[in-house]
Length: 255
Image (tube, rainbow, N blue to C red; front, side):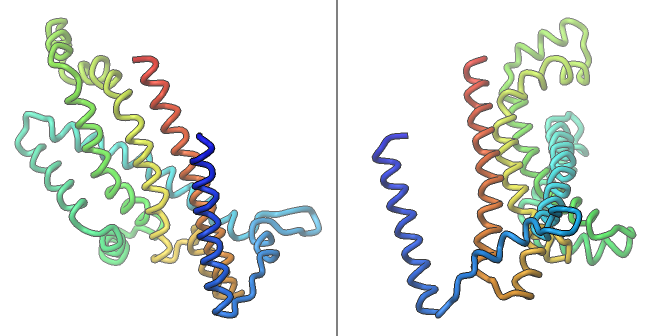
């Protein structure tokens, strides 16, 4: 990074901090940052234990991890259906993608939890995972499809000439080659999933966002808690972004 870029970044941060300080000063807000740390860890007789923000972060990781696996599975199945010779499979995949991408995630979450939940007897955690997986899977399917169609027809013809069926061709020829193109955008989709997971707090799942709401309601540390939660999300997504860049550079070098 060049010195001029660092200078611009420092100046930008200075302007933002100045606006925040001036705004809160006019509101007469009393900053109490020293109280925030106890919501990450606090001391008991047997040592330090995780506070509500850490516990909420673990729930966020759990929801994100399960949803990530399911969304990639939904995405791959939908992509294969769209590339299938079956009209019914293509219609199902097209309907799923259009329905999910053209309706808000919050509406889908409420529909699964309040409508399908009582009918199918699923709890709020399952409803949250299902809503996130279906939503992100629709976008992941386009990434999978783009990666698959980027493989040249010669690879298909070579596999068929060797007597491989469609399943074995996907498994041994097409997908191993396509993965290098789709891995970076899929990681970007994972970043979106982490941010979208904050919506599960609307159905009272005690993830990081919901824990923050509860702390603010008890302590009125509005700015301190929400800024802290924003920084936590920023650190997680920034780490994943660095991984995306690293993988992108590695794949370029290996190509």
